[in-house]
Image (cartoon, rainbow, N blue to C red):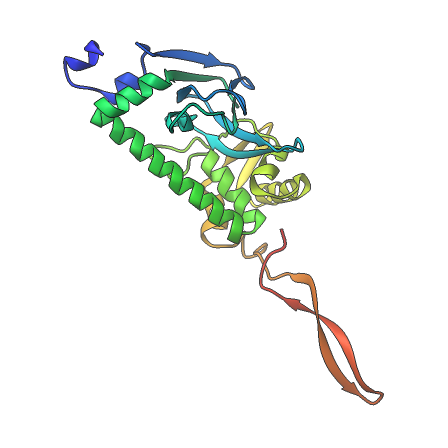
Length: 259
């Protein structure tokens, strides 16, 4: 750490260079940083590229739980208490460069360097807020709105600087896993977004700022606005006629958009 002591500790320099207890690794697309169930013995700092976290249930069903961008830590659970097992698999979506920090070195720098602790704390708070926002999105928003939000997050809208409108390659199956719907519904919404000029894609997806209208204003457009849908729940209604009183079934509106 002598190189950081001369002019004070620089978190950015630490996270972008190799040294004692840390080394730079490079992964090709589809390579794994670690797999679910492996020993949690290090933390990765993603310097460039995109990655994803996936989990597999006991029955073998796989789900993508979050996407990771440059500037984020991966596998931070390894510094929580005793050695444990990874609860998810981290995989590169594109070619990635990352700093692999051994567990002991990560703990040491967190305790000794307050500047680094501040950086890591801000990351944890941002990750917590993102997780909470994902949960709210899943509970209360339509699948169409959830898809729009995921595409905007992948394009990094809302972050400092210009957004990366051309997002990394991602399948409709993965998008469906992330928003909790079917691939056919994702295909339907993607085609509608494209027709309305919100996105364009020929192999890779390009996201336009106009897609924010779906998230911010709860509508696609005046022509294709989300409208209340008739649910499958019916209610009995008493009807009195010449032939006596009978009960008829009337579908009722619940104000939500079917996912």
